[in-house]
Length: 268
Image (cartoon, rainbow, N blue to C red; front, side, top):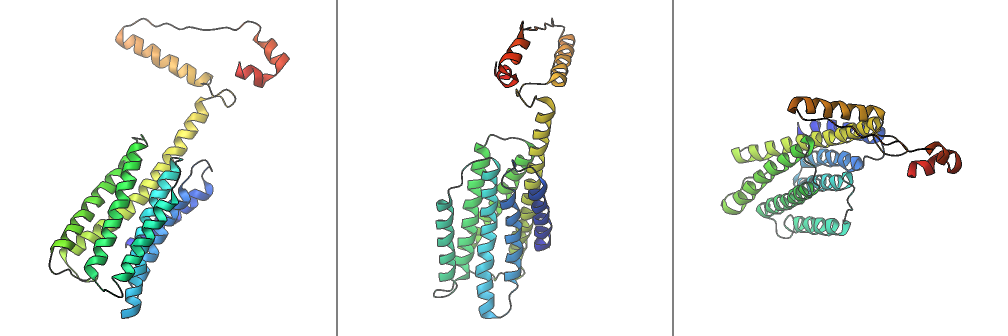
């Protein structure tokens, strides 16, 4: 189910990247994140002992990579630089640690703890960045809430892995495992939906700006000015306060346009 939902949302984000304006950044990284999560589910289903261990190693890495790609997409969406060294080096260390505890020193407990802690750190970084971006609209709030809830589940999972003497296998049916996997599937779905809503909200904002602002000067156009005047007039009637309108007429402004050109007149 999680892989199917990741596939659908990845396709949606991929088409959005193709047909949305190029000014909306980060859609490519957001589209790659569900693809990484989908491929991870395929690796987790690998048969045989050796292929199974290799599949789990790659699957854990792809799950972590998916959340990293989502973080990078958020940074690109808000036009912030991406410090790849701070991303690639920790990711490589995590993969090496997982390989060590899968081969020379096999320990399922340590592998779960490392992956859980790495995803928790990634969620924390994304949460801090979204909070610092200053955007408080509904899609961003939805992504923040999803990350916060999944972070709580990850912390509980980490505490359980480190404190419980017997840790069940990944494929073992248990209450803790069911909640953990269910939270992961829900987080994948909600984060993908949040990315779609964030991009759609950005398009709506740009269209509203184009409809209410002049393309040359960047000022409000006639329609937007009349709407603002109507709103202020209604407010003055509602609060029974005086309403004043100031108009400025520049004499002989046509001469400036005719002499120096319309672009110079727009700057004036």
